[in-house]
Image 1 (spheres, rainbow, N blue to C red):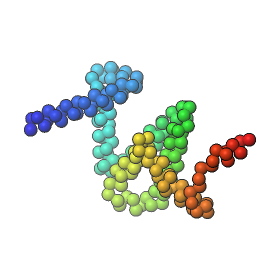
Image 2: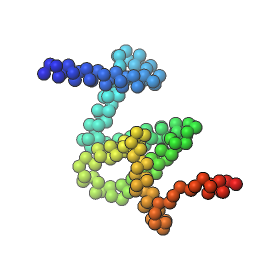
Image 3: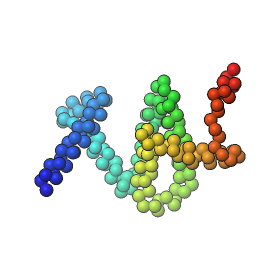
Image 4: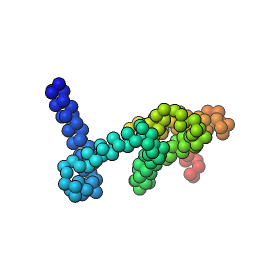
Amino acid sequence: MAAQLQQFQQKAEYFISQIDKELSKYPHLNKLEQTVGIPQAKAYGAVGFFLLFTLLVFFNIFAGFLTNLIGFFLPAYFSMKALESPQPQDDIQWLTYWVVFGFFNFIESFIDIILHFIPMYYTFKTLAIVWLMLPQTQGAKVVYTRVLRPVMANARGQGSTPAAPSAAAQSAHTD
């Protein structure tokens, strides 16, 4: 039992040190940590904030507000960073996220009364939003290409998903 506890403690310390290492990239957090005077305070604060957020959403305390907060502020921050970067790929990722996020919020507004009766709805919604926004999962791209684009193509009467224009077609329009 003691060996298992020690192993858990080592894993937890490693996890905290990894979080602290990542958060050390932000000068404001380093300054806050120096002011507080607690080593790895930013990592403990981040873990505590995450746990508090998770508990509030899980127990449906301000869950709608917190879920929309996570779905708006973090993507808005990354969208503004993407607009300032020269790479177009991050612009595409965040534009796709906003289209999908807006679509789901639009649909949700019609069925909101029913959704309140689904247990842990906001927990699942929060997980879905995180999946949509993470660059590693590219969830928004998956939903857009597999659901929204075909639905919109059918609504426009095209029947199938339009193909991307060829290089020759694009150059013909720019000449």
